[in-house]
Image (cartoon, rainbow, N blue to C red; front, side, top):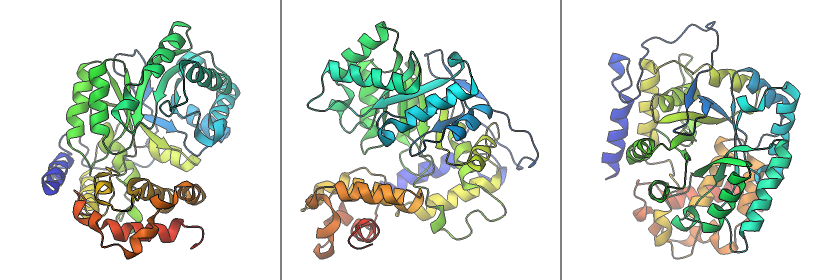
Length: 394
């Protein structure tokens, strides 16, 4: 089954000899000149009436108002944040940036939200969180409010959230509801989001290695008027593990953006923009199809990562006799090794309950390996993650 999944995704990457990525909408056999001016493009976000920039500012871990102002000047009009990021400082930074540059509010699209309501949450507490976000952002309304980090169909179908959202919408505080997440089982959650009819936008992980059936789901969503924005298009962002992957001046980052934007059901790709060079590199990918060399690079990455890249699907967790939180641990390892967020990754690992950590893996036979649908060496990956993330071993 795994080989079939990945072969289908390889086929989507297209025929490198033709310089065209099949299923990607556009082809460009030669890379564009380096001095070509940067131009942002915009796409409709489903039936919302919003026009979003093809590159969105993914604000996770960034509270730099100057950087956000530079993104606005580069034509990026769409900003994705959360009230839970950095205790709200990212929302405050975005509000500062909008005020500093003086961009009219109706030309900017703001996506923010909170994790699904917990056991103690009520319509009133959810409404209060919306009001707090509005205050931090210095705005009267939120374009897209997210039910973020969903982990179950129960999260998707939260009645307190729906009621709080409808109240806020009637008051003019929010306009559209989004379903967001990157947890294992997102396909099921997206299907539930389509069927319930309460969501206008999907904000989901999407890459060229993992789940080809996701394309069919997003196409069905588009037919219902649901707009899609995506993130984590780098399939783990483990390019540093492949020698000379970007030889010849290629940019793996740009290639993944071009791949994602080549799918018409994708309105925008959210990128964590941590410096000014990253803004320019990302915007330079807009409007340019995959070159033959870029397609070959993505093929090579997919081929080498197919059995190494954790999809956070949680399938193997059912086979673990110790209750180890495999998906969470591997996500934190990715933050540590691939995104430069070492302190945050170690802090998150430290917060896991003792039984959920990878301590038990050292003396375990590794039944998780056989349970992984992608053929990963799960136990070895967990032990490697423990060596990086455990403060007592660092």
